[in-house]
Amino acid sequence: MDHPAIKLDHVTIELGGEVVLSDVSLEVQHGETLVIVGPSGAGKTVLLKTMAGIYKPLKGHVYCEGEDWQDLQSEEKIRLARKIGMQFQKSALFDSMSSFENVAFPLREHTTMNEQEIESRVRECLAEVGLSQAQNMMPHELSGGMKQRLGIARSLALHPEIIFYDDPTAGLDPINTDILLDLILNLKKEHASTIIMVTHSLLCAYKMADRIVLVGNKQVIVAGTAEEAQHSSHPLVRQFVEGIMEGPLKWD
Image (cartoon, rainbow, N blue to C red; front, side):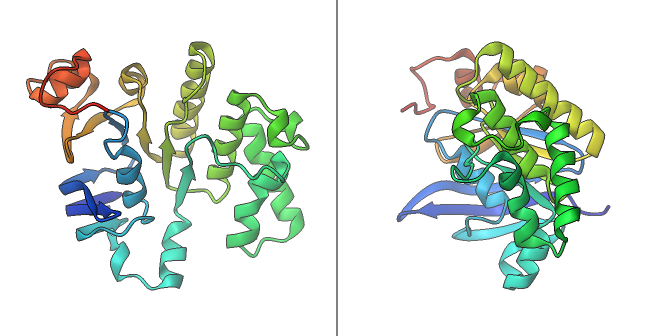
């Protein structure tokens, strides 16, 4: 392919009249795992959702699979969005729907599949994340790790090429964190997908990332591989990696 999976070209993002990120240029290559780190409130999720076409930039252009989100009409955006899977923060499950119905929802909304085809695809997705026995359970009956896996199953339903994960290990204990990250890595390998992930944990970033970017002070700094990030001389990266409160990087 002659274009990156995602490209941001001098993008400025404003929310509520305040600039959150300024003049961001960044590319994500096909098959890459890009992990976004940074202090709470720095704009990590905003960056993620801008890449996914959810937020419209104040300035600049956001390209997905070579297409500018801003140039697309509604039907074209829907077509492009089918190439994307999104695992939202805290999974964002429908509380009134069973596990089965949560995964079936995007299939019913965005495809013309019949009920037999939907049932087959839902069972396949649940099996991939180890939730075959939980298809009739409601979200309140699931553990934290099971909810996160169900969110992943739903994000996979449309066979996406690019998957966005918004802090998928939030609230999980270390063992369940490792289990979930291994699952994501295995699914990435199986489906040859591109991953963009937000995390608060440097340990998660080091395990997952082909490249790490730091969001802070309205900037996006490419820190490089896990090893490069750990040895970076950039003052913002250095401060975040070492967890130092005093310095140029603003913490909440």
